[in-house]
Amino acid sequence: MNESDVLEQLSLLRNKEVDEIRVEKGDFLTFRSILVTQKDFKQFRGIAHHGGSISYRYLDTPRS
Image (cartoon, rainbow, N blue to C red; front, side, top):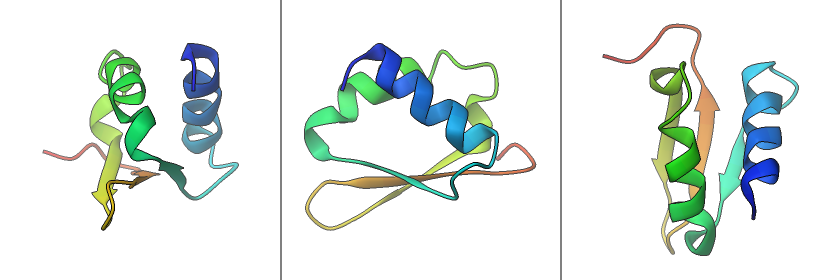
């Protein structure tokens, strides 16, 4: 997964074109380094799964 893939996935999630994206363990560091630079970072919620993958959803209100 490269930067353009991550930005595309985040855009799909942000625009509610998809309900959830799944990031595999090997892509997590790349994904997270881009995610934390987003202005709406606090509206993305990650849920860890057994085996190291993470599902992300976009929240209407920022988490605290």
